[in-house]
Image 1 (tube, helix red, strand yellow):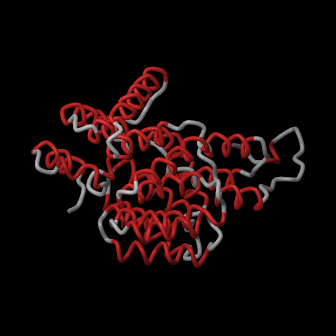
Image 2: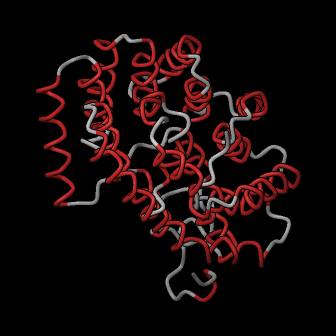
Image 3: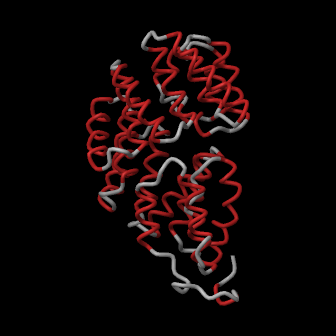
Length: 318
């Protein structure tokens, strides 16, 4: 992206990305936030530095997006080596895509040192620490993110998500219900709440939350898989197999994360197929594999030597 001064068409307003758009959009981003965010920002005339910085904030997505935006993050750091937001983006890519735990932590610490008031860095660091099983530190980071941005829906949701992955579903439910009081239509909170209810064995409530998340998200496969798992655990085997068939049909038309299919097969106690899809997730370096050691669903696979091997290949702690 070149500077606005090089453009023939003048900007209105000149060279400024409204903070009200980015802040509000980031705090309550919808399920399809990434293409919407890119489109809105590309439609505006933004100086090179700001565009590089803005794009660097998107680095926390899937591997394909990590590859796409990585150069923008490096560009942002070339323009401003003391940019905490860019280091936070690098850290997330190293965490979720490269599985480089020391490198990720180094960049998270650098990000929070350079910009202690950048709430997303603390949120993402909390997510990293959760996957490293360092829950006390994760709670401290998400608490700091909440202090900096108490109205952020995603920060409030991740507060419940940390409890969820710590297997404290009661506290997760409490936090997620508070989040939904802020916005009853915030999709991630419904998804996490469904998982918390599932941990409690409250399957009717879990099913209701997953159906709501599925509706709000426009049918995201992630929530369809959640629904299938809950159906299987609730003893609704026929419904779970119908949901699995729908996921497989979707996978033939669009990419469905293999981890999601592995989850449903695991809930249906089809171990061989579960490992087939977990291996596919590994080959894709799917970010969802980073939940393998956290999700109680997979406890039933721990006794299988293939699980220990996969966990070691992903370099998961514990």
